[in-house]
Amino acid sequence: MNINKYLFAFAIFAMATSCRKEEETVFPDYDKNWLVVEDDPNDATIHANYLFFKETGIPVYINDTIGSQQRKDVFGHDYTYYEVLSLNYSLGGVVAGAPPVVQSYSFCSKADVPAALAFLREEIIPMLPKSAHIPSILLVDTLTSNAFGTYAFKGFNTILIGAVPQIPTMDATTRAAYKGAILRAFLTNAVLDDKYSATLQKFYTASRKFVTSKDVYGVYTFQLSSLVTGLPPGTTATPQAVGFLGTDPRYSYYTPLSTWMDVSMYLEATLGNTQDQFKQLYGTEPNIMIKYGYIRQILADMGVPVQ
Image 1 (spheres, one colour):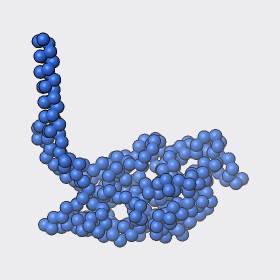
Image 2 (cartoon, one colour; image 1 turned 45 degrees about the vertical axis):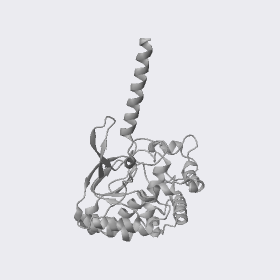
Image 3 (tube, helix red, strand yellow; image 1 turned 120 degrees about the horizontal axis):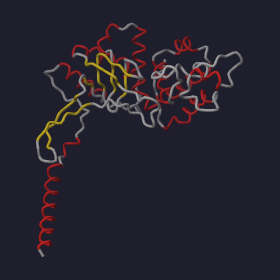
Image 4 (cartoon, helix red, strand yellow; image 1 turned 30 degrees about the vertical axis):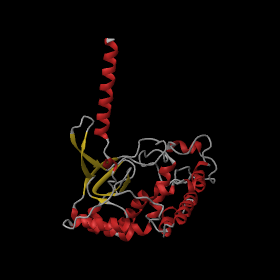
């Protein structure tokens, strides 16, 4: 009888504890949308970012911590929660080789924002199709990554744009390359959409057809001469000869380790050069020009005004 009383008391205590914890941990505003810009007329930078957000729907930040909120933990203790932008690379699928990561970055100053917003309005926004989803932009000064250089990197819920203080003094060549890198970061996911899978398979096959014993992606470049077949007589088996713009940015002795890296490299080169400039760079490589045509075809269907 004493045991039954003990078990009954324990059950009542457990139910009460469970109810108390549930009450303490349910807060409707915990799932708020952080990716918005609220106006502050007294702060010129925030006000400019607010106007840009109202025009484009894209929030722009100069700090990776974009908000805070008072919360309670499961024991009812107060603490401050900080919402920080996620810089994890966001393409799906299995990542071949080292995952693309941001190695370092430094924040830009408020004085750099007006030129950056003007550049985005004039050079970037007019190029974006409706299918491109840009969750947010983080403007930074210096940026280094292991895969995408120093200009632009696509994170999970933001796109880092580096070299912001240099925008006003960029020459035409640098500005075009800068534009290409940013648009690559903005558009890669939209280009890799299932809608374009048939065209992308043709893009991949244009290189894969030259290596039949294994996948041409991720091949040690010194092995190409023994693996590649089907090139015109006298043609050296190089990454460019089989349709790659270059080696993988993370591993300089290998062809691009993944199809999405191949696409990313083509997007940046296509969007950072006019058609004539691209032909000057790669016009002697017929397989590169074939793959370039497929990328232009996708971009045209998306409504991207490629030059």
